[in-house]
Image 1: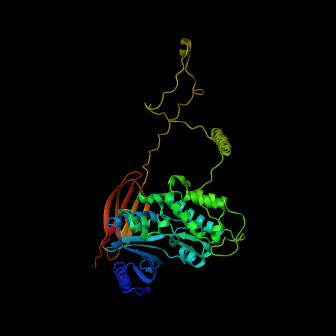
Image 2: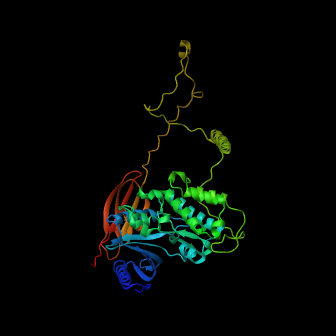
Image 3: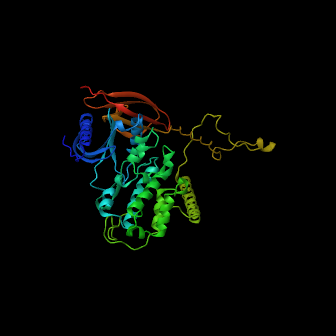
Length: 456
């Protein structure tokens, strides 16, 4: 394994070599590491090739010596949720796990540069370019927030700008998992830039979407150079300043309801003039970029909504009436066999007649009415399915009731309520088997599974 390392003090070089050696020893069966891409204070990112899929990935590792005792469980629970995210502006996660000395996960390798590098080399962004980038990141965050996932570490170093000025957000929930179980102290300030940490994080262990909104607004201010005294600060309209000030208020309840509301406020305060050139310049009118959130629908005015409901109800009544009339005109009369009386069915209505009418002869068969048809019995209620989360180190093929479901990890896999047999197999490793019971609507988590190497 050949790794590219930067020069530094002898002690730092020895530490780098030891981490690289651990990666080669504990993850060598899963990945062929090609080169070191980035080394941070708590983690390293490598370009590697997945042995099983032959796919080139970005492999991130975190030494467990830097984490709290219960970090492994928190990390795998967080990654199981992150692995379900599928969005244009989120870097997808392929796999994750933990070994004796490492936490690791692999993700799509994106060709591009980090926003941190762009700001250091090119300086502040144009207003339109900045707001376009913030809109993309806000779409990603809103998508995750609606699925119960917060990022917890929004900053320029975790934003990759790919070709055609597409921004992608990575490292979802990683910082929160690493810091779980330990009080927020020096570790936070070392691993995350203090200005991006929302005030409420000092007393809340798991801040929500409002903290992500705070960090996104700080990122926007940095992209605009609003912390400097240069031209970038002078170019920020007052309405944009006020929107960012609200998003960075000390009280999380005073911020916008969602990150998309922040974007709407920012867009409302921008001039119509289009910029020309520069990093992350807005696209020309000939090639517009459409950002679409498939679960977001603008509110409909109340009057228009009432009119829509009224028209819809009228159409439904007309269609239903036509269908019933057609059935009555075209359906042939069919003899109905006599049915035994069922106590659950209501009795036919009985007319109260005078005494003389009661002695009248019975109606002829030609004029008699057929007995009423029995009502169909109600369909049985089906139990709501549950969801299964499975993670194993190393990954393996997942079978549920002898049916292949793909390879681990699997997150939010729909599974019928009841008993099931779970089996994970991989060549060279002892299979994992367990019988589980899934309740209606229940989430069942089988994470932290370690397959035993038969050769060891």
